[in-house]
Amino acid sequence: MPATSIAPDPHRLSRLVSLGYEAPVCFGHAPGRDDRTREKEAWNLFAREAARTFDCQVAMVEHYAPDRLERSFIAAGGLDGFGEAFSQARSAKAEDHYLKGMLDRPAGAVQLGTELVAPDEMRRSRPYSTLAMPWHLEHFLMGTILAGDGGTAFFALGRTAREKPFVPGDKALVGRLLLSHLTRSMVTRREVAAVRGANAVLASVMYQAPTGLVIFDGRGKPVFINEKASRILAADDGLALVNGELRAESAIAQAQLSLGLAAMLQVTLGRPVPAPPTVLVARRASPQPYRVSFSALSPLGEGSDFPRGSAVVAVIHDERRASGATVPALFRATYGLTHAEVRLCEALLAGQSLAEVATSLDVSRNTAKTHLARVFDKTGVRSQMALLRLLTLGARA
Image 1 (cartoon, rainbow, N blue to C red):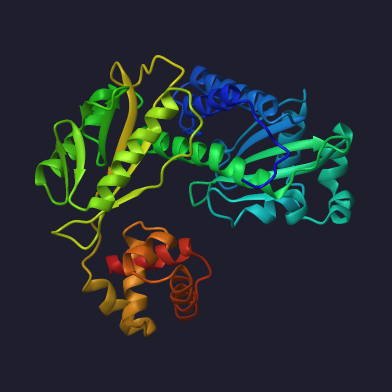
Image 2: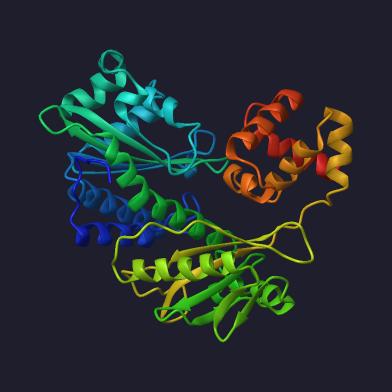
């Protein structure tokens, strides 16, 4: 493990991770004022605990959605008044070099402040004079929690000039032991919230959700399986539930499923472990694999939103897009894509990350990046999000 300037107490860190899963994270979708107030209080509590855990003057969580202000959110802990001052600066659209440097980075990316902005340039900026200088803040660490069309969420730590500067080893520690969990928490809660009606009974809505949901208790035994998951598991197309255990035909996928569930059960017991990656489960009837991700459920609370005893939820994605023949024919003719480039587009449409695309296509990550760059050149887009929009529109044509 590289040297770090952060040495968090394991008990504090486990509590912080728990708070990250506990805090409501469906920004802008709280059905009432009281829920919105509780949401803000939960994130402020998280930020205060983060400042103490990482021994910093300030810790902050921001959900940045400039085109949908109701989704934007700022919570700060450690310095009285900093959150309000930062919110005012953001509302005034003050130029923020750190924000610019982090906007295009994927979830889980962590950077030192000096890697984003040179110290001299930072001190000349307006945000520094209005935000950092009054509180004597000098050293920063920034991480991306969420990235995409739904808005971008960031986590930040700040220290004064008299304190230790952050070092490269801090990036690995924060990314592995905190951001991986925050990302999992936000994504899972957002997916669950997307199928909740403001006046609906949650259990009923979850049961009819278009995404497969299997909820496990603290012993790893299923206590809830919604209708979509029941159909997926009953089909026995590479993924099944056998004696209360998720089973994949692939030995590698099976090991990943077992490790994923075990890791999240450890989180519910207060042990700081990294969030497991999404598991790809191959299918016989489709080239598009199931995608299974695990998340802890309210390890500090009573879990009133979920069945009694709930500890971990497995979210099963069953992506069914346009057929492979439609997309290649359209895009090969229009943009002159090669067979390899078409396969990459299909994998992106199936919801895979670039790393997962490389694995599923049995190529190196650099080769996948090369294919993607060529697709960008041929289609005239500049980001994966823009490419996905173009592919989706094309697939529907």
